[in-house]
Length: 88
Length: 411
Image (cartoon, rainbow over all chains, first blue to last red; front, top):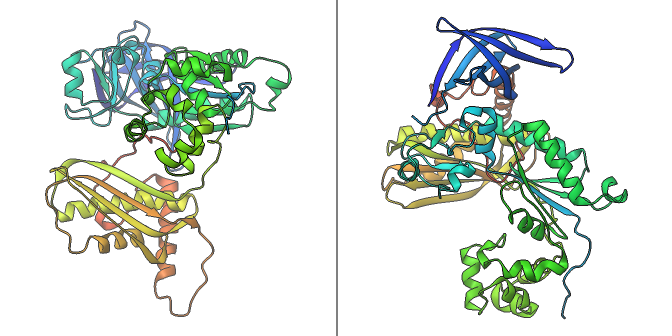
């Protein structure tokens, strides 16, 4: 089921000059490391003057979905929600 | 007059995203693909599903309460709506279509009409089915590999929309003038876009029970007997494939509705909700640089009754405070018959906001306007509801942004 988290997390990301995209590829949360798969959906919106970048993706083992937010104002990463793909 | 079926080349394309909100959620989360998914405004058992995936629809789960959906399939995955993501999908969808022609009209957040008359694609002799296949590919490339669209092509918007609904999901159909009778023979009256149960009743009273009988009805019967207005003439043309739905209408009103989560008959709580709805309505009014000269308030109650009142105002409304004060005046003397479940606030008779002509004895009118503009600037810079009227204190999580049905003018 989907669970709201809203915690700042450690993320390693890279920028691909070829694709002109920034992509998170490693997440550390609750003493656990997750190798992240490709971004399934990316979008952004403005919160005041700061752009919020939302990355939705699953880990490479296909066990957990993450919704990560990068705040362009302070460059902090927040894990907003997770989902295990089940109803309950 | 016996008007023939329109045999002009079908150059109108209707495109809609399949199960829009649900499929975008499935695109964003591969773990819920090929599973029954419902997007609901509230995820509690009484919450209402506003969009369901094809896997859910196949089981009969469409617009219904979550508890009823769970009775059909206990494993249905329920998600809250994500308006910003759907707005983003709408913008990407629009951007793809604009690669083909500038004649792109959004009909709602998940459907567009594209007029290919005179377009480069048509002039170069390319068929619209070939263009349609390209659009499907481009939409997958832009929104994601799981996103599919229905495409309908016809000589007018009406037939193009019917065509788009023939083979869901991921379908593409063309209706030409010569196909109209065959297509109508496969449909019910209620399947026709624009025919609701009230119109169906009117048609039935006039002895019209099928789309083919509707098509065969003479114009004077539709105009004089069934619809009793010019609407009958429009239907006569529309059914034959002639365009009558291309008009673009201006903005007449701005409004916000709210289904009250914690039903209440506490006047103070209702007043706070009204203030927040007034602020949202006022923000939209000012964002479009409009002012209004009328307000409407509607309240729904737990006992299934409804109360509403509207009034033209003497002054031009611009600030949140003005809107709120006029609503409070409308409600003066009214007592709630039961707990409030729905609230609607709207301003109407809107027109572009012109520079204010200062009067010598205007009192505080300009102050209110300046205050609204100043607080809008702060909210633009630091985020929505950073500065709010005192009555809205601590209401950040109440009346959050919702997905719009129909109008897309705020996207």
